[in-house]
Length: 376
Image (cartoon, rainbow, N blue to C red; front, side, top):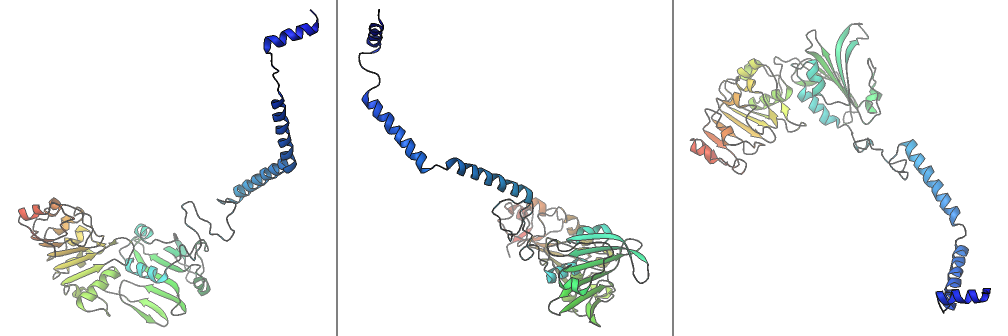
């Protein structure tokens, strides 16, 4: 069989019609033309892609080396720490000097020891060390608490601070406690720049009591009582003695006492000597507003019959019931109390309760127990 006959036989076996038609030829050349047009329109595409890849690699390296969260972050944007708090002192962490001074003066007490002071004063930095007096050369145990904006100040031992430092906020305020041999507070000094007075103010604490101006310095005069200033102020308001130091005799004149800690952060913890509270023999009604008092001090008030809690003072009576066994009236209506009737019935001499019935759903149990329930 010659080659032509073999070819014709194979074609008949596959198909009588040609597999590659004229229509197929047109489609092939049409597609080839389009591809040529595309290659003409974007001749530099591989180069562009290479350039974009290089830019991404450079940007990634910049983010890694600078530690910024975004390569598009402005150099003027405040950088946030791990908790997301910006360090721009004009927006974050600015020291409210007036508020901080009031907090320190209201919290400081000669009953504090070193450990309590370190946890009580919420400063930016604190150091406790044997500080040498530059004049006498005597070393005394001293605690320094520094308050400042951002990270503009480095706290070190035996620093010499000038008026210019305080004016520039480096630090904005300092509080120093000198400790006695028994590690009880011996003296203290509060230093800050007053914009209102245009000078650096020093407030020296020789004991708790009334503060007055002497020779351009504010000095706290010695008082007969060593009690927290907030408590002393409350006693002074109660007996109409706001401009003079409180004495032990004054304690017996107190009939109603309101201790308001709402201007402080959190609940104000009342501290003091048991003997001073036992001298309040005529105190019958105690009001605690955002303040808490330990049961051992409550027990010392001999004739306490009424107690009023206001604001975030207590959630239940478990922490104070021991000191309230003598009271006959309790007012918890405008407080954070969320206990129940059984909680209130632990007070053995309780006769009258003023409350919000929606906060004590089982209040009817109190009436069943013979306790009068009022809403005002």
